[in-house]
Length: 386
Image (cartoon, rainbow, N blue to C red; front, side, top):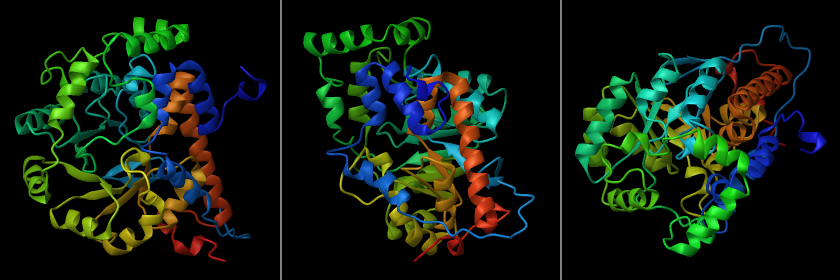
């Protein structure tokens, strides 16, 4: 390890560690975006372009970073976004992540395509409520079964992804043969695994079973990645409309957040079907390249529906300062994806806990130097528009 990474601090520090510890195809699966990755870059760049208004000689002796997200009290306005295959970046990764999130006082969201099943995450979280993410599948029976299992596991907030009628074209995955079958792509991935013996011993050997835990009952051959991908490709339903979300709203008794909203009219439609909240999101730049960054779309959406539903945002959040910026632009809170996976891959559960502590300290600093003591008071007046 190079000296400057003896004590990693930021999300990008952990990204560098993750790059060294993960097989290349797995790192690029987490790190990459769609197409030429312009939207992926814009997510970060547009946050960086927002400027804060610094104020002095304000009584900031007592700054409270806490907030409520989906009715849940949080230590700061942040939740861990759903990440597929998180259990491949660290041993039983989703279980480690829910423990770190609980310790930090923020929600964790389990992906439908996570490695650890609902019951394991529930046990690891020791009864702390966590969120569950789901897609609309052609097999509505499978959707109902997953919803019922999530409810039984104590989940009361459902994050429903609406921007995935088809999987985005991610060139990094194509180059590594992630979806290809045959001897050559298998050899490419095998050589990359052998180049990371630490990951091989920790995850591939000791982290078993490496299967899609939440889909084991639905997918024939769920232990096989190719069989799983074929099932998922067949299950993504491009015919889904708002009528299907109405059906979902009728079945799910808890809070419903729709993730993947980038348009004001879609935000209004989400309110109309009874969503309790929306996540302004372009899927981390992983779906359609050249769409706008999430943060650039946030203000108009928040202005249109922010008094009617809870508005969250994801994509490009890399620091506590970015959390402050998101709230100033109209969000109630943020979700982070890549940063928590980088931290888990690079430093394990302790690394993720350390990153979350850093984000809270950065957020506290931003509040203090902006002269605001409560998250509910953060608004456009805390931005430097000059």
